[in-house]
Amino acid sequence: MSTSPIARHGRDYLAIPGPSVMPDAVLRAMHRAAPNIYAGELVEIAASLVPDLKKVARTDGHVAMYIGNGHAAWEAALANTIAPGDTVLVPATGRFGHGWADMAEGLGAEVEIMDFGKRAPMDIDRIAETLRADTAHRIKAVLAVHVDTSTSVRNDIAAVRAVLDATDHPALLMADCIASLGCDRFEMDAWGVDVMVAGCQKGLMVPPGMAFVFFNDKAAAVRAQMPRVSRYWDWTPRANPEEFFMYWNGTAPTHHLYGLRTALDMLHAEGIEQVWARHTVLARSIWAACEAWGQGGPLELNVRDAANRSTAVTSLRIGAPHGTALRDWVEQNLGLTLGIGLGMAPPSDPDWHGFFRLGHMGHVNGHMIMGLLGGIQAGLGALDIPHGPGALDAAAGVISAG
Ligand SMILES: *Cc1c(COP(=O)(O)O)cnc(C)c1O
Picture 1 (cartoon, rainbow, N blue to C red):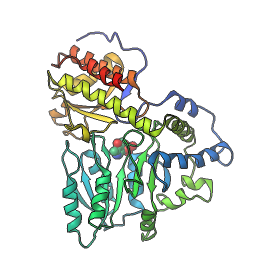
Picture 2 (spheres, helix red, strand yellow):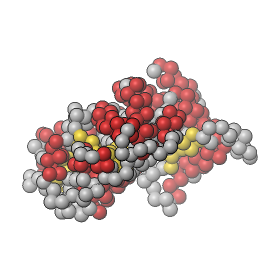
Picture 3 (spheres, rainbow, N blue to C red):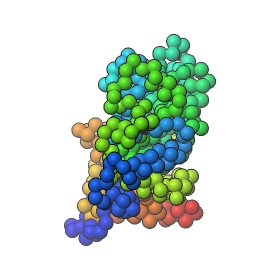
Picture 4 (tube, rainbow, N blue to C red):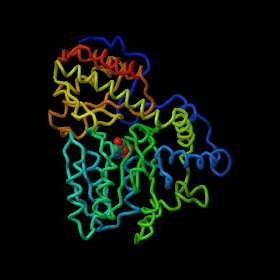
């Protein structure tokens, strides 16, 4: 192992699955004096965000904006649709499904969790069975995580809609796209999603602080039947504000609005289909490198079938203590920060040190991903962790082929 961090100084690279890398243009847009919150540019920017957010989500429905993180979006979606005593079905494929379920429990919901483990997507047939058995239609909503950021499993959300329709079940389909929006293909209307939650700090490339709940008319009708909804979380005035302050039920997140305006301009200039294609190629290059390393050592992609992998985040298994050692080495020696393994083992368990994750969501391109992979290659070598050859060639080959 090298004794001095000879290659440490330079621009740091946070390659964790959120918060993501922020474009300099977003940071520049935010770097300004406090704007007037009663009239002028800021008021216009806020209104302009609505259609552009809906364009990213591929919906003609409504969007409510909140000051908050992903957990706030979870709570907001539930607060508008789920009353104490209502039942929700949560098909979990990692830590985040359990997180949303816990939020629902905190609001007094009856939670039915279907746990599909940590390496596989939802089993749609088993969900269909559960829905078919629910002849009394007790289940009021299915809370489905599109990309589970802990396992990097990507679920087939349209397939959940198909089984809801096939079983004639009226439950709302709610999707967590906090990790996937602006990275993995997501089509809210075409896939029949009623409620979708997102945050600004992953594919949307803005510092943490804004959360979004998208909803359609069916979900709005459910909201209208709720016995009560807390004033703060109520999505109705936020989606249809009569006055500017109603967008956020108070002071607007002023600088975030400038940042998000710039980020959405960048996304739409590139084109959302193109954004998805970029994430796909970069993810495939990462998988190719990992497969090559794995040929001669313990590194393994957590999700075996590429069809079930997110293109925004990759979860890896390498065995303890290699995961933590590798993260520490690349951070201390290269200024490169990799994601911790989340939810794969309890933090007190020695096995916890056998996992890590790569965030490749948002503002990333080919040279950044090659740098990320090159850093891991250097770390594997420095730490004498066995690994197969040809990983960087394999990744470069995927990027060259496009
Ligand atoms: C990041 C994330 C969350 C939680 O977001 P916070 O901003 O940390 O509250 C929830 N779900 C998914 C899928 C995520 O990736």
